[in-house]
Image (cartoon, rainbow, N blue to C red; front, side, top):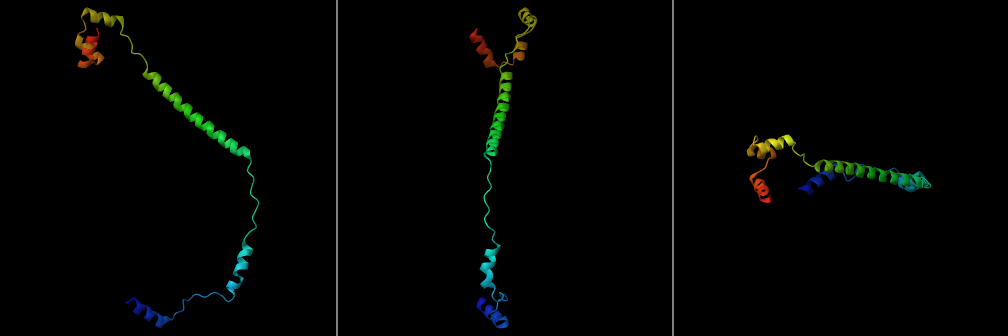
Length: 123
């Protein structure tokens, strides 16, 4: 089927592709291309100071980031290490006098049964 279609097209239009190069085009092509190529230029010399400054700046930036993270971590850890406050003498006197029940003390300290048993065993 494809061969028949190609034969029909070749008979109707011929084998010509429709593209032609001007006469003598390829004779002068190499010399034209070579004439358009520019002479190689000398490479630019980059001073060493730029590289040193760039490296120093990146080290300074990294040190600043580490410093910020360190200060944030130190601040966070110092807040979590605070000792709990000791109840006032008035509150302790009320507990000893029996004005505050043991249930209120447990609710205040948020102790569960295991913590209560552990504190009783330790006494």
